[in-house]
Length: 227
Image (cartoon, rainbow, N blue to C red; front, top):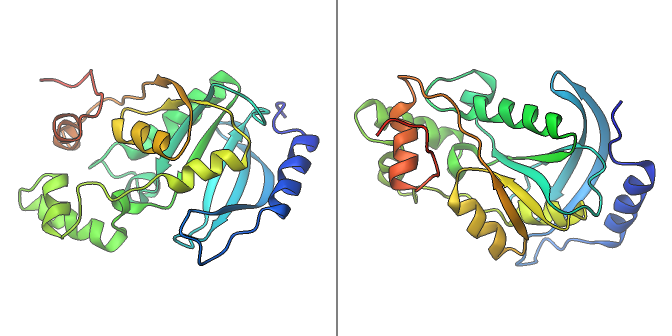
């Protein structure tokens, strides 16, 4: 197995977590590492870290490659859950392609973190996401559909992700993302970002409008789409 988090690093992290108590009444995102285990995968040898928190009571995860404890300039991908894409291989989005590309990229670099946040449908939840799909079937784009349901175009927040990085004692990151909101939101929550790693996928006839909407309305840095 590749040199992932050492036993010394894991011990330091877990001991630190024992001293770090979250209050359910706290106004700030408070995250605790509950368990760490090895995870051999088809993308390489990783470790999986399980987190609990006091904000949404969902169980978030970090997939760690290499001994990143106390390290700077760590490649980090923050991926929001997409049941239809990640599991069913939906062609309406590029979520699964981005997820797998991020794992391959981190494996190639020999160290990095993929944070998996349970923020289905850009934070609106699975049922509302399917309602938004129906509105898209009737002609709306992905952001118009969210707004028609009473949501902002993107309801996600990255306070939990920022805390997860602090729990892993990461000093600074190179963010694997095309989304400018992730940069500004993570920096707002105290994450030091030293660079960007682009992660573009090949568009298909099914997701081209979706990707163009992200580029044109959300200002995602997608340079390889047709005009």
